[in-house]
Length: 300
Image (cartoon, rainbow, N blue to C red; front, side, top):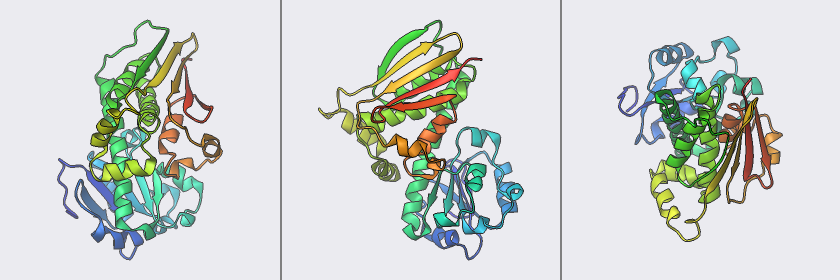
C-alpha cells in the first residue's frame, strides 16, 4: 500500500520526487512483503526517518540528489547506520557525482532504472534479508551472555546460517566491541555457508529471496550428497593484543584481488558483505582463491 504504514511488516521509504525515474517505477513495484512510503522532498524523508524505527530500507533517486549539498542529504539514525541499514540508489551509475556521495550515505548498491521495477524489488528484498540478519545478531549480543570464556585457541565447524550466527555471537564476546565483531563475523560466516558450502550464486540468492524460497533452498541443498559433508572451518586464537579469526570454506572462492583494489566495491552486487565485514575489523585479508579469510581485531 502506498502512503500508508502498517508497522507489522516494516517500511521501505522511497525518495521519489515528481517526474523522477524512481517515481515512474513506484507504481510497478510489487507490494508483497513490505509497506512502501513515498516521499517527495528531502525534508519529508528526514521527518519520516527521525520518527520511525520500522524502516527496513531507503531507496533514493540518483538524479534528484545531484545538486544536494552534503549537509542536506538524508539523515539516518546511528543505529540504522551501525547495523548497515540498506540505502539503494536508483538511476544511472554514471550520474553519481563522486564517491563521496556513496560514502556519505553508505550506499548498499546502485540499481539501473532501465532494469525496471522487478529488478529494484529483488535488490530491496536481498538487502532487507541481510539487514534483518544483522539486527538479529545485534539483538543476540545485547541480550547475552553467550561467552567464549577463557578459551584462547580453538577450531569450530558449522554448516547452517543459525549455527553461523550463534558462533559469531559467542566468539564476539572475546572482543572489546562485541556488536560490530559479531555482525562482521556473521557476514563472513553466512557468505561461507551459502556461497562456499552450498554454491548458491549471488544472483541466484537474490531471486530466491524475492520468491521467499531461500530457507527452503538451503535446506534442500544441505541434504544433497554433494553438499552434505561440506562445512565452514573457523580457527579462533586470542593473543595478548589481538584476536584472530581464520575462516575457510570448501567453495571455489571469488576474485577478491580485483575487489579489494576498488574503493567503491560496496556498490557492486558481490561486494556489500565484504565491505560490511571490513568495516568491523582492524584487518581483513584473503588468501588462496578467496575461500580463506583472516579477520583481526586488536584488543588495545
